[in-house]
Length: 274
Image (cartoon, rainbow, N blue to C red; front, side, top):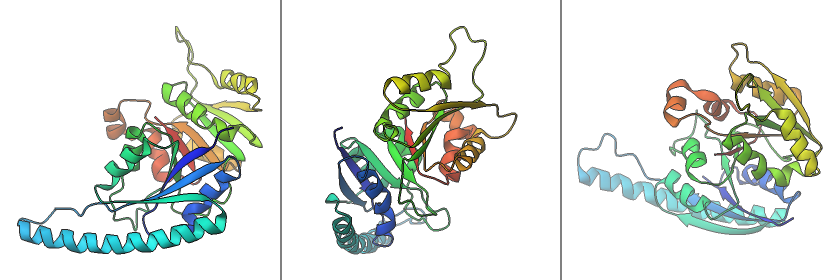
């Protein structure tokens, strides 16, 4: 199977080993090259009415970020070497999310840390990266260590285009996994053209040589995101695969939605595609 060209987003020199551990786990499953990306981001202009004050802030901010980028590169190259990863490094100065989205389009997979709501000050917007990159995004929870990924996989299936995209984007991990469960919540019934069910997905996976099982349940008022994460915990899954934003972006923004719930509450790595 061909290798993967991975973009790993690095936000600081601290925690490089933890950030590269999931990528090293992927390297056990497929040949890959990782490019570490440090994007500076830009300071907020809120509260600045004069250009001089804003210019002073930008200068101080960029000086600090350049120093952090240099430290992060050293730490990244050392840890990548220790892990035996083929690695390159990029530093870009510009708006954080837009920079990641642009460079993601030149890679097979983006590995991105979930922002820590109690500590993150970068303004990173993972949902916009998932929506805009056109590539699958592997999100790593800010809490916990993840040194193995893709042995026990839960595929959250909803019959949508996004679900299909995620399923096929994850095929290089599904092939060879110890256990794959295709999990469906509130399966449609009585439709003129019914959605493909979890059992249909399993049959397709078997044709690809992937052993899998199908399970379905009903939400009965419980948030679907909670049901999915609970199911993942029950199966000691180490990876969740799912499509993102099956409804309109406006509806997701107003009502929350499964995708947003998973992004906020994830407990294991999540491969999302849109």
